[in-house]
Image (cartoon, rainbow, N blue to C red; front, side, top):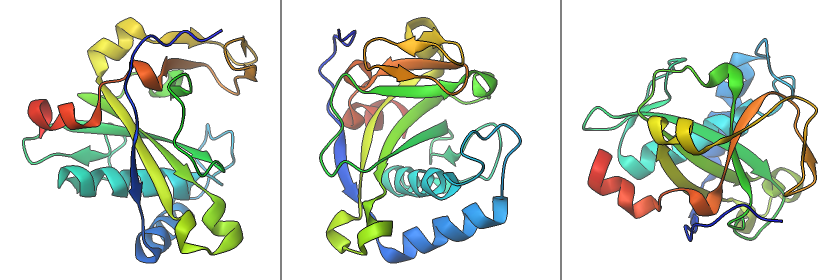
Length: 184
């Protein structure tokens, strides 16, 4: 059963070794965050997502808890990244998530990214890919996302959630190009 009704499709982007190494360094420097259910092991992927979005919007990474990227027009973007081993674009019914403890961050919009982690295992440059899945304003997200509690089973994808979170399907996000017109 898929809840998604939208037609948004992610755009594929690639990253290079320098971007990856910078993300690894930033992740190692940050260490383990208090509420991290991956014990800090996914930091690098989150930082890589931030880098990809900052390049896409010609923005500045802020290193601020409230938001990750500031666009040239002053829009505050919070980048939420999930990792994947899949070498193909995420499907429209795949979920984009914001942990409940992050839902009060003072951002204008969320941008969701999926990063392929296969590069770490293969060192194959063809595996250095990611997808900017779409975006949604914070206000719209608060009205449209579905809440899941830690331990709940999301029957749409048979996934048991690791932390209280709010989910929205990729297909229900706004298309990446439309972001440029409103926020950059």
